[in-house]
Image (cartoon, rainbow, N blue to C red):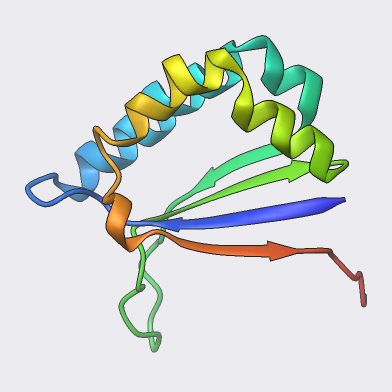
Length: 111
């Protein structure tokens, strides 16, 4: 399993509330509406920071996790016409493309 964590920030001038609403209620349904999401994606989550005492302000406004069984599935998903024509253009409407942090991992369960 190959896991991607995309740490994202909102574009300038967008409120936190509008960013979260768009991410959860527009972008996520758009992402899951394309057939490639059920064919290639094993898990897709969107998360947003919550107030936490004694912790610093989060460095990012959101987190998207996408899991794939293989690099071939990753490549097929992101190369698909549906992703390139429908999902990817929406990302630029609410995500600051220059501040995206990406971590690619393989999980090791400890507990």
